[in-house]
Length: 162
Image 1: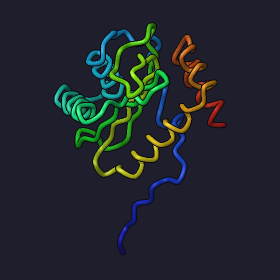
Image 2: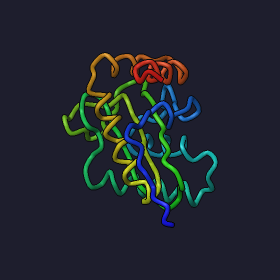
Image 3: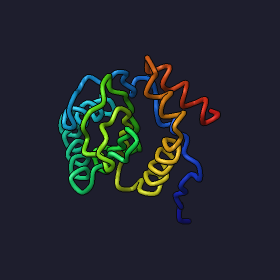
């Protein structure tokens, strides 16, 4: 009997995110530093080789097209064999940072999504969910104005009804 994998229909970001994977404020002030800092948040339990592999995957994806989607938001992401499950990190910078965003505006709000190649369906659903939620001006403003990781995740949970 073959086992089939199902991709959940609805991805709750608050299920993928925890306060220890949120940094308010992010310390880095440039694109490279921010990518490294966000990858570090999702790889605290990983060895240096796995961390470098994930950072390389995120940088490679970023080299194709900036993940700065506009309105002060960036969603860097990548896939790598260094992980066996999808992981999400988030953060807010104290001051907006040039991230080569598609609209040319600096970025303050970041969500990093990484996972294995085998989670492509779940990965796409999570990216879609992030993008859809962050189209809402009020949510973006509330997340950017969060003063702690707990406030950030509570805002997200409230919106998702989790």
